[in-house]
Length: 314
Image 1 (cartoon, helix red, strand yellow):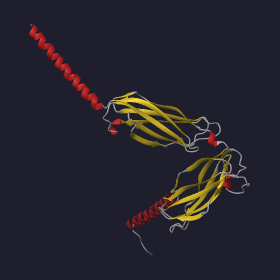
Image 2: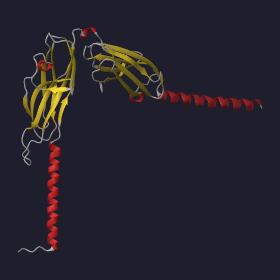
Image 3: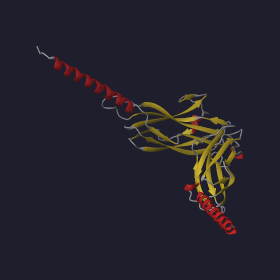
């Protein structure tokens, strides 16, 4: 019979406790690491407008950011009344409009792949908005050696929103409701612009992108930027608003005078565009400081002249 003294008993209990904690923590770590969905899709969705009988070729990029290889099995589906359907489609279902050649593939860790698909809108398709989707069943390509199971087994979807209309080219859905600046005279190098867009077309949605410019008196571009953050498709009467600040000290403008800012709003659905401009005056802050110094010197000189005249008169 083996005798274990209390000290050895305590060591055994400590070792078993540590081993249990180590195994539990590692199993928890494995499940957290490999059950997470590290698949990146860009762009996240697609919105477009087509006439019956038209077709379009589009694509998106999938990237595997997970810590293991991922296998993909692509199926087509549609969202109808907030219900996702992945099989048993009627012939006129919009899921049948989408064609993809390569539906089975594997992405290694860090690998990307461009998925190209074709949209064919039948001539008989009635006007309306349709929501086909590209459903992807993703699984871990190889079983994990510690668990002997595929800890990743999920479904993700690339959603499409298609406006089908016979007269999409006759309407400009975008309307610039507001484009202004918070001050007409900028002397502190800071100003704020406000933009409000809305969809004024009852027959189709819009998907705008904004090009912003500041021009000098000679219409030369001083700065420009593209604004598409947060811009998604706008439905009827839906508005989008953005306020953004401009720091003129970063633009290195040294001239005084009138400037113009303009926005070019392009509807990526119909390729129609609108332009709106606003004018303002700008005085660099260094000129304000120089002017203040000159005025201060003049006042001091004037006071000295007056004091000298007063002294001479006495």
